[in-house]
Every structure is written in C-alpha cells, then in structure tokens.
Image (cartoon, rainbow, N blue to C red; front, side, top):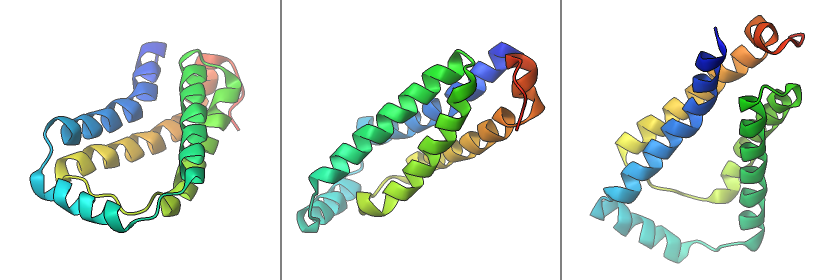
Length: 133
C-alpha cells in the first residue's frame, strides 16, 4: 500500500459520513422531519452533550490531520476518538435518518475498522517507519 492509497483510506470514513449527512440535509424526507420534530419536542437537551460532542469533534479532526501527515501518535488518538464516539451514543438520544444515509454512516464505521486494522499492521510501519504494535 502506497501513501496515496493510505491517505484515501484515512479520508474514506469522513467522506462516507459526509455523504450520508449531505443526503439527509439536501434531500430531507418530510416524514423523517416530522418524526424528528416530535422526538425533539419530548427530548431534554443538556449543555454537557454539546461540550462533549465538540470535544470529540476536535479530537477526531486532530487525529485525521495527524494521520494524513503520518504522525505516530495519530493512530492512538484515532482509536481514542472512535471509543469516545461509542461512549457518547447513549447521551445523543434518538436520531432518525434515511436508509440511504444509514448505509453511508455504516460504511463509515466499516472503513474506520479497516483503517484501524491497517494502522496497527505492518503496512503503517512500512510507510511511516514506525513499529506496529
């Protein structure tokens, strides 16, 4: 795997998640919007959720930037951001998305898993010159 292929694999989770978000944002379904409005009316919002999501976003962006420059610390930070994402799910609440968006979000998680496998394999060490764990 060369550097260009690895950079594409690094960007793939963000690209697929962005496609899923843009699909729902640009082509909203009226029934999904109605259900989401109903849920939002019953849900209690907490300020700590916004702070945690901003922190998670900052960590993810930092890890992506580090991975694109092949920094050795970035793979550990990327795994931490994935674990942090999973721990924040119960606090986000119920979200409704279209099936097409769900496909792209799931592809994002799958490509994240593939990326973690490559980051902790000999491929990362071969390109970056660091020892794989």
